[in-house]
Figure (cartoon, rainbow, N blue to C red):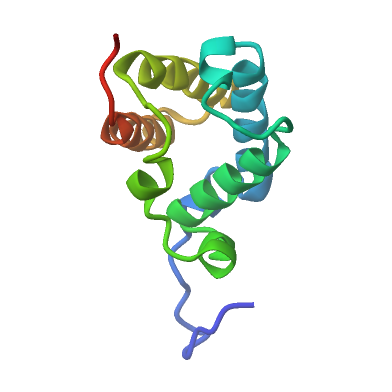
Length: 136
């Protein structure tokens, strides 16, 4: 239920809802982590033996970013992406590996072209922003 003070005026549909809501983001993130699990150099960036908690965090973050529930901030506070990823060497090679799996997962959703482009743009910009180290 929304807190729309004037129910006769409809709220614009969020991007989150437009692309299929929670189920779409579950599929995206599950497919992404299936790729990560089979990519040892990228998997090394994840300290937990079980990728499940990372899966939940990424899904909540993406849902919130794209207009869905604010669960991420409610549970974890401000995203502070660079700060949270600071302890991990995110190199251009790791960025490219991350993008490879994320964009393959996005491709599997077969979203309409405009929606796909919007998500692809954000994910690519975010990946570039996270680089904090150089390849050796």
